[in-house]
Length: 301
Image 1 (tube, rainbow, N blue to C red):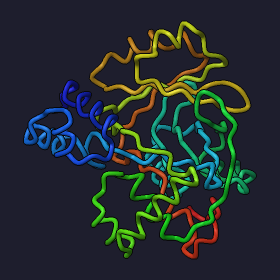
Image 2: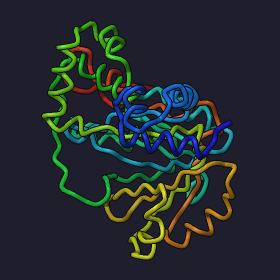
Image 3: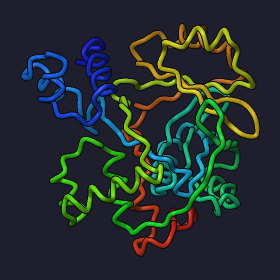
């Protein structure tokens, strides 16, 4: 049973001390170690409610972010998502019902492969729409390219999945010693690729999501929801993608009433409809093993 109070308490601690040991957090916050350890055991981990993930600049690695909405008959949603998840360039594919009924996806596309997006999406549905997506507020984006050995792809996957992974486990996974791994991490930081760390709440805790597309953001909306866990993205050619995650135990109808007046189109994500979850981007599957760039987004079917 998930306790919202306990979960929010842990999230606040992880936001403050993303990589600190449980013992150090307990000392700094004057919390009994055994009590804090019990909380971590209950909620923390990739297969549990919350993790700490590396914040990675995919643009500096030559990737562009897109969101897509595909019309898929209800009976075909599960096999379509299974097929999409065979492609490492599609880290998110979830059931979606609203302005389009079917599947919503996130795609990370190598800069030089943007002309292949339509061919990729048409494999899953004849009816779709997609948008280039960036963080809010808008800022200039500088794109780089993949210029690293394959070991960096493995390291990025580990840090993205769980940035609190013990160094001993990273050493075993990469077959490298601690000083080399620290050098690799510091290099990623210096290049602006590894930007920091963030607390991620898994779909076990928030198994629904409101998605809205708006032509503009009103001051009323920004003021009203500034204390809520709202995610805002800038989409091109124009507009904003607004997401609000919550639990199926909450009143969805009330959420729609409260939120829909601020957007032009909306729908609901159903993260728990099937057992796929949100897989996340895999650098180790997207990058060629010789380290020389990315595979084609059309290589996976």
